[in-house]
Image (cartoon, rainbow, N blue to C red; front, side, top):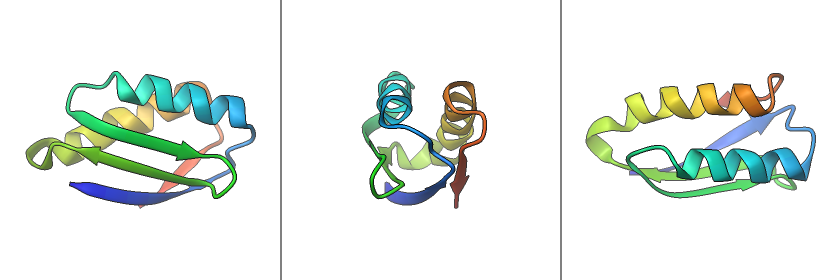
Length: 72
């Protein structure tokens, strides 16, 4: 399943790159792109576990950028 999410309060390109690297390590994520300029995250992950994977993605994002929100 591939979905696009809007991000709020992503403050820097370095944080976006760090998020992307850490999310790519999550089991079940096949493709990830975090774009600082458009404030969007495109994620492709296992359909059967998508909600579970997104919970891990949210936690990962909070560790890198505590103010960043993923709009579902």
